[in-house]
Length: 497
Image 1: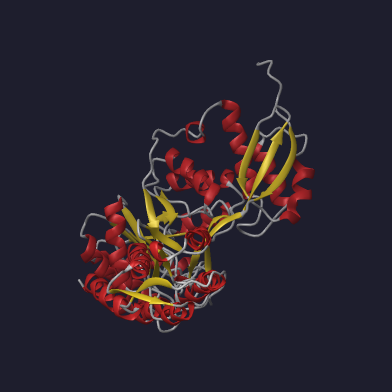
Image 2: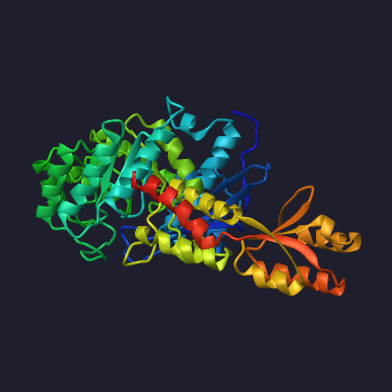
């Protein structure tokens, strides 16, 4: 026996994280009209503290559970995970993704730190790499999904998951066909029908019947797909087992099933070929590990659900690395929707209007949201910058402040000749430049962009009037509209290829 004293839990805390950046929103295919926000930062985590300074972390939980969790764990040994899982399941039962799964993960984090080993090693893992698949979120269009699939393949992804939620089976199959044509046999294609979101037999969106499930599975088999996920309601065990008997394609599911007993029933009845348990539904990885053992005993593969993101994904990564029968790790990965008003926010009104007009070709009619890949969005950002910086047809003008003001509305930028200004006036204007909107300076001219034209021009005009100066300036007479049309043509050719 070691003389090292046993660890004791001293406190459980919830830490809130600030949002660093709002990236955008997605409309999940399984929740028509809903929104999934994508952020950098935000959310929370659970910390479990011990008397020896070790702190375990896990995904956040509902703060209302904190008193019950503290009552069950403070003063206890964090290694006693089985007892803790049982007592928390009884005294601190929460909702999926808001329950005590994060506490269970934090306890295992302490165990790994105390042993000086990563969890996948403690769990018997023999590999230090796992294959992630890009789990797409939106329904989108066949063309956009195919384009994105190629990008993902070029980035090194080996597999992706498509959502099929169109009104007809023919539309679903066309989506998969386009993606398969785009990537060939260089990527594994997984397909999700999301028909098991509800615990009953109704949910929003298209609802499949048994016939559609069978016919879709057979078509996907021809296209070489890896699996069809959740093709029927969650508890239609008999029909799911019958489906498996009629098709060759692997049938997957289980992300919303609660309790080990449900997985026992599914395995005994032959419901799925591939189990997809979720730690944030099963109250942690302690129960999830048992599902993995059950799957192996019945000769099934196991690919956990995405873990809710952040720390849950990391816990699932360790599990996948410890299982020989886990071929993939799920990672949610889909570029967020960008809305037209957000894309053009802060731009000159003329530029914004033209960008919105051009991008309407990519907007879904129902939701007014862009179907643009991250690659295309970067092209649009570059386009906006180029439009603001195009310089053509520079014509010198000598005039008063009122002349300057009259030219601003039709110009991209104004340049004031340094030599035409008294030294004091030139100094005052140059001091305005960094504060306002100076784009560049050269030997002879002070150059001001006028994307916020009138505000900046008024400041310059005030100086000129106060100093009673007639300045020699020039503006760029090519209108934003002409310049935009020129470059929109280039961009349009690129999109049409």
